[in-house]
Length: 407
Ligand SMILES: NC(=O)c1ccc[n+]([C@@H]2O[C@H](COP(=O)([O-])OP(=O)(O)OC[C@H]3O[C@@H](n4cnc5c(N)ncnc54)[C@H](O)[C@@H]3O)[C@@H](O)[C@H]2O)c1
Ligand SMILES: [Fe+2]
Image (cartoon, rainbow, N blue to C red; front, side, top):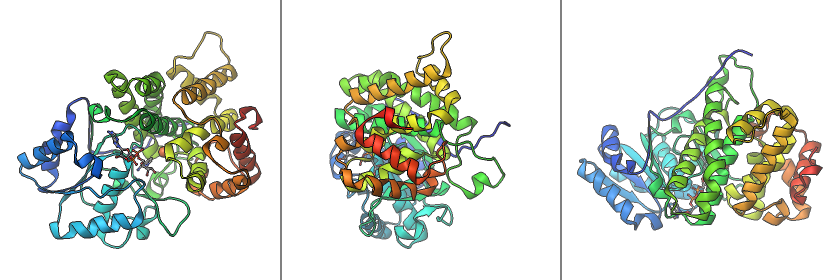
């Protein structure tokens, strides 16, 4: 196997307590008229007002759009772009959870290229650079601050939709763990579990044939040496500190680990891509109206069990990152230990143990399997090939919450 890597990232990533105070300087290098996308809860906070004042102190004209709604309804993205046109921003800043960052990405896209979000659904439909983006996350989870994706909900479609393009990678990401201090335990758990799923799926993703076209024709290209590095860092930090951050939101060290974990997971999956757990969550989310992170994390131990036989060396490396190695352990024993430990961590932070506990109706299992299999970009990234029969068995085992039934 020859060494191969692909990685697309912001030009500048800042991480650390207090780094939000660099926003004015960073944005001032990119433009002079800043549109700030956030939600109504955040726009009233003292931290937010300080960041806006910092932008103004650096000479930027600022317009705040605090209309962001969870899961970014399609028409809200068009409305935000339409409302911003008369202001003519030259830099777009997203401050908030994944929904705020994704809305900022859509707005920067629509302001640069016109049209509607639906014109760009799918991979590599964005024709060129969008307005420069700065992302300031306030949750530790999605990794959207560094990824090439914006996720929307479209009232004409049952499943959520994605716009994936390297042009959507922000120019700068400013990750300040202090901004996550106000996240309640459930939000911390759901966002952090999404990040852990990103890291594990990116590290266990398929290794594709590294032709010169691979990274030019696709947004997500499978695992590679550099995405592996970020994925293992994320797994180490998240398995070490996520439970602690959920139990004690004031634990600054745990908050920093979890935010760094989410960032590193974004750096990994933004190029490697995710796989079956994310594919199955699409129909599950549509049917149960549960949060994205809750669904992918419920599925994670079952998908890991399904992929186990194709990924024994990867699971052994994950075991090392989690400090689970013991002298003389076989790869089989390490794989068991990793999956058990991840399942117990997820259970400890309140992730449901099964799809039935998540609210999936028994008579929708086969439909779920069919829909998941249709999400080709994620399914083709899964390390073990999946056909409909295998997908139905996997969904049925996850529905029952029985990992022994995964074959
Ligand atoms: N673009 C990507 O790469 C990517 C990856 C994964 C998920 N997503 C998408 O991101 C969205 C989920 O993002 P999310 O999990 O960050 O949640 P979110 O942005 O939808 O926010 C959820 C809630 O948390 C609140 N919140 C945010 N920060 C807070 C804070 N510091 N303190 C208290 N409350 C806070 C928000 O106001 C909101 O009410 C989904 O639409 C999902 O599909 C995108
Ligand atoms: Fe995710």
